Structures are given as structure tokens and as C-alpha cells.
Image (tube, rainbow over the protein chains, first blue to last red):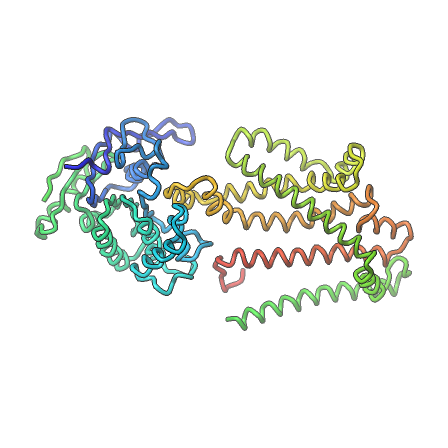
Length: 259
Length: 260
């Protein structure tokens, strides 16, 4: 079996409270591995440390203890190694308001010094793929929430990263739009053979998207893990749903089993 | 939509013109009550103003003052921009520089004029020094504020692509601080126009300030008004240019149809 793309070994992250009232632990001795091509949904209640784990993988913050390795490298200390290797879709679209939809998709490619003509072709192709053909010159404020999130997905895919990190990207959208985008997102990840970490606080969304679901307790450590089989029956899926619900509602952590 | 915008613009221009006409009318009434050497009639002021504009030797003084204003503002902007970037990235630099700039802000423009006359010989250097010292703190603090208002979300998003410092500056920092820079230019332009006149009044041999001093010596109120209007016109034109740049650079901003 090949080396995992993402590996956490006893990773702990402790923050100092800004008002000087001591420290708080956001991630507590977290260990897990994610293999190439896997889509892993990370689930947990609000404030359980999912986003802290996400930021550690993204290299935006450094663990206080333990070891985080992404493609065999330290994402924080070897920050520049990951140029073009990680694409991120954030909770809100984070589009630059002064750039058009096309220019927003171009951002990553421009930072990576891609050939301008080729970069524009790539950006246009991704906008078309996400159903935004004809909106290239629109500024973010004229686009709907769903369209803006599509632009941000196009921006993440356009740099052709090895890993996609998604932090509750559809949580601010209405149910119908979120469902359509979820389906589209999974299709694109499978088509382009990416490894994806998808953070959510909705059990159904996690089960729809992930090959595997990791449920976190607070502070972030794995409370439940389930591998989801596409051919699983509705009753099996319901059982996993109920198990996750029970585990998330109760302390201490339990251990689940896959279907 | 376009017609509505045009109508709004025309209405705004008409309202502004009406305000100026009321002011001119009031002045004209005063000129009928008081002697002309105190309140010269409006037509005389207009004719003297036009005379300055069409007489090459007089226009040179206006251009000289305009050049001094731009020189001073450019110098203060460049220096203020560098200081703001340094302060924005280092708390130590802020602790060191911010109190000095605040101290400078408390020094009256006239004091800088006196210091410049005592310290330096060259007239142009004196004026440049005064302009920079009086507008530097405002430029620095305004650019710093704009830099600090940069969205953390956009910063993290941009950083996720691992940009170089230069790329980050070009793609994120510059567009973020542009609105603040344009506001700083608008605010400092008015300040600079006032300060440059004081500087020229005391220590220069040319420029609008120098001409104002001459009109005072000749007790020529129409001349004083004509030279003052040169400066007002200059500020108005440059403000319009900055506004046009602002409208173009910030065209991405959403505008609500409902007025406040």
C-alpha cells in the first residue's frame, strides 16, 4: 500500500486565550491517515476543532505537539513546497470583490506563474464546467451565493491540486443548491482523481460525500470512524447515521464500525 | 438605468451650481453696500481670475504652486506608504514610529515654515520639506488603516496558494489599500493647498502664496480673490480627477439604489 497522503500522529494544538485567561486545547493527540484518492468527510459539532485540523493540513497554523505530514512533508515548515499542491474551498466563497469571476478563478494560476493564455483557457474551461459560462466578466456582488461558491470551487480545481480541502463549503447555501453542488463536487473529485478532506457538521452531507467519515469529539480527536460502501443498503446507512448521532451526542468517545 | 443615472448627475450638478450662484449673489450684494476695495464686484473678480489664467507670466505662478503641491504630496505619499508597510508588519516599528508621527501631527504648519527658513537655504527644498512634514503623518496613518482593514479571510485564501511577498503585495495588498490611498489623496490635497500658500507667503519668490502677499501689499482685494480662486480651481479639478480614478478603480463595488 502506498504512503498516506495525509498523516496526523498525536497532533495537539493549544491556543492562548487572547484575554490572557490561560490556554485551551483545540486538537488533542489526533491521529489518522488519508490515502491517495480518498474522500474523507470530517464531522463534528461546532467548535470541536475541525477547522483547526483543517488549518494545520493547509499549513496555516503549526501543531503545538505531534507530527502532521502532508505528501510526506511538514505543511507549516515547508510551506512553499505545497505551491499548487493544495486547493481550498472555504466556508464562505472568499472571492476578491475587485476581480471578475474569471479573474478570481485565474488567481491561483497567476500566483503559480502559469502561462497567461493557457491559464485563461483553463479558468474559462472550469467556469464552463461549473455552469458559469457567460458570467466570466461578472463581479462577485452580482452573482448569487451558489454561483459565487461555484467560482470558488473552480478556483480551487483550476490549479490542479493533489489535495482538496473543503471547510463546510455549502453550509451557507439553500438545501437544493447545496445538494446540486455536492453532487457536482464529488463527480469532479472522482473525475480528476483528487484526495479530498471535506469538513461538515451535517451527518447526511458527510455520508453523501465521504468514502470514510471521521466524527470528532471536542477537543478534536476521533470519536467514530466509518467506511462507507456505495452499495450499502438504506438500513445500513441509517444505522451508521444513528451511531454517529449517538456518538456526537454523548461523551466519552465511542468506536464505530463501517458498512 | 443609464438615463436615471444621468438625471441624478445632472440634478447634482444643478444643485451645486445653485449653491455657488447664491454665494456669488450674496457677495455682489455686499459689493453694493461696502466699498469696492473691500468687496469688489463679482464680474471684476471673474475678469481678474481669467486674466491670470490667460497671461503666461501669471499662469507660471499657478503652475509653480501646483508643482509644489504635487511634489510634496508625492514625497509624503511615497514615504508614508513605506512607513505604513513597515509599521503594519512590525509591532516594534509601530511602537517606535507612531509616537513620532503623532508628535509631528501636533506641530502647526507655521512652525514647520519657521523651522524650514532657519534650517535650509533653497526655497524649493524649504517648501518640499514643509509639505512633506505636514502631510506625512496623515498619509502614513491613512494607508496603515487601509492595510490593517485587509480581510483575514482573503489573506488566508491568497496564502493557501503560497504566493511570493511581491505577488501577495500585487494581488491582495494593493487592491485592498487603493480606496484608502485615494481618500488620503483627497484629504491631503486640501491640506497641502492651504499649507503651500503659507509656505510661499513667508519664504518664496513665486507661486500663488507669493502673489497673495503682493496683493495684500497693494491692498488689491480683487487680485487676492483672483489668486485664491486659482488655488480653489486647482483643488477642484484635481479632486474631480481623483474622483474619476476612484469611480474607475472601485467600479466593482455594489451600490444600493436606495439613498440613505
